Amino acid sequence: MSESRTPSQRLDELEIKASYAEDLLDQLNVTIYRQQQQIDALQRALATLQRQLPDAGDASAARNPRDELPPHY
Image 1 (cartoon, rainbow, N blue to C red):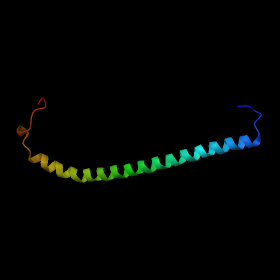
Image 2: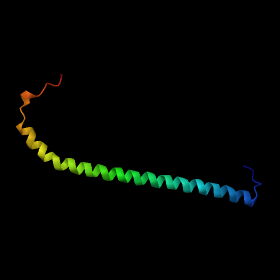
Image 3: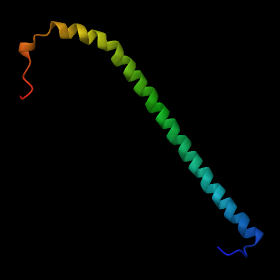
Image 4: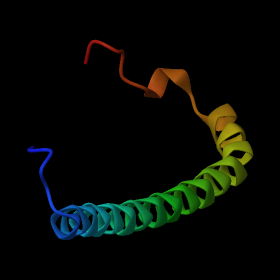
């Protein structure tokens, strides 16, 4: 850019940059909000799975390994 910009041109450029920065900040805030929602949902799912895990251990003891298919099937 030319160094002979007027103060008005410089101010316009700064306003444009500030507008882009504000838009980017809004987009990042939305992204962070959505990610936090996903984290919360994953934590709830993990807690549910952890509560079910001891129950699954009891069920596996009652299974007969002969009833299961070998890995190559």
